[in-house]
Image (tube, rainbow, N blue to C red):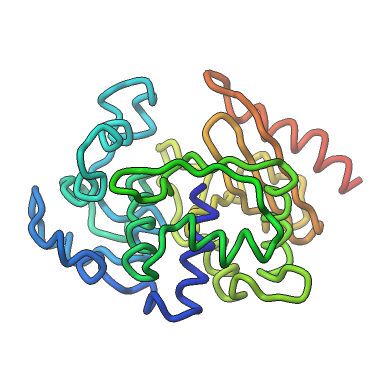
Length: 277
């Protein structure tokens, strides 16, 4: 869901609806100028920081399970105004310096798209992304206030997931049409921030709503080039792209309670081994 949403941001930038990634949240949300836990650092948060999960908010989503009502993502979904809930959170870090997985940041992208394009993220995707690619069967739940739930929840077939991976493998082109600008494919799938050592994200880098493996991660240890980037959803929903192999890997899974590393081990031991031997 998050990676598809990132694609929409890139399209909106190309179309001129969004000025650029250095635009601040205050510019997008003047109606929320008064927020709880005021902090001068909040005025510095940019679209870049939101896309790269480095906005600096104090946010606990990965330590607490989603069944825990104190998980901040769950607290957001139980609030009256999800956008305000995110903007009200206290700051822990300066913007742009620390990776902290935050589905609230991804939800803000829905509101940004709606504010700038005049369409919901789903309607914008139907016209500018799904339609041109021939994707006509999806489900995308609503969030608060008729916003599209860009934090999670987009469902589609594995074949259509693979289309999206192929789109990125081909630099944003589908058949003879440039759907996502090539500069955005490069920027969004490149490493914009690196997980701190000793954290859950130590083996990963993050782009704009896309994951990367760091060079020392065993998943990529036998590849000639660590150019892998991937979209990952809860339970093991995966779109992985390996440009130097011309490879797109898609899987759906139900790994709740299991180690996601098992999935990466299978890819390394069976898929990567098969295509590199």
